[in-house]
Length: 388
Ligand SMILES: *Cc1c(COP(=O)(O)O)cnc(C)c1O
Image 1 (spheres, rainbow, N blue to C red):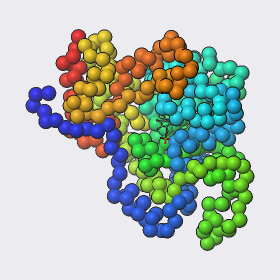
Image 2 (cartoon, rainbow, N blue to C red):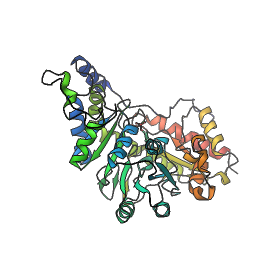
Image 3 (cartoon, rainbow, N blue to C red):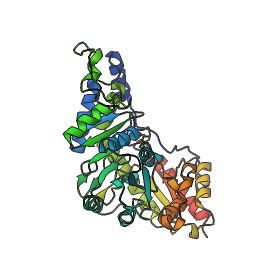
Image 4 (cartoon, helix red, strand yellow):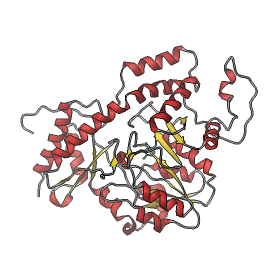
């Protein structure tokens, strides 16, 4: 890049304005800072955004997945099917029950769990499937729901990336038994930390509300309010997974901006697709025709055989130019904690193939046009400088 001035474009910047600051301040001033009425408002608004009757707020996406598996009654020795290419949380929550996450390979184009490989992975102890909608692109939910029905399995979405995403016109969150969202700092809606479970099942919703607060009976959170009572019952052992009204206050403001933030990411994805589609060494990420992605991530892939450098070096060169990137994901079987699985690379050839090629580029609503253009030019310059 001869004449261009060096910039610093971080991998992510959360979109937080004075509106969020004001809402959180108001929540603090109210004197009620833990879970309370603002959380209930946030849950109601979130449920209606996704189009489901019930939403239960918790303090992380991981906690959401943990509670969802708990209400299924998952037990020791059970198996749950998860994609090999996901964040550790998806599999970790299965291990909390001394159950076994069964890793399944992905599709090379969408990076989503392969439904054909799901069929091969089902055994007598399989209880559930956790599809992850990678980068916000919905998995093939018709296929997955059919497989689940035929084999009597539950489906819990890991919807950490997919707000808002649609499969054949239906919102992710409204298709499976339970869907779990994350409000971690980099996610489409953030409250710093946080999560949400949505469901259509009233009894499950009640159980989840109890589970997230020590298994206490319904209105125990009010016990320090004027209208509350010191007396409460504990129905069963639960967890300390409740969120706070400070987080929920931020969530309500973020929810109001969701559609605007989504439109901005779609625009960036379009610019990337247009800029990278003509270069032989680059594979732009595509979303299948019957789906809409939240574009939480922009997973570019490189073609190592058309370049003199590998993916790691490509990332280093981007970093030298000031462009922050990431890789989604390091396949789970590569981690030390899974060394005992003794995986065979043949079982995960698509995950390996994607892992060798993937680079997640910056994509967030507050990126300026200059920043978007700078990322594009940096990628194109590195690709052309290192062409085979
Ligand atoms: C972020 C993420 C989670 C976990 O969410 P936390 O809120 O950080 O607990 C789970 N699964 C996937 C795929 C994620 O990206």
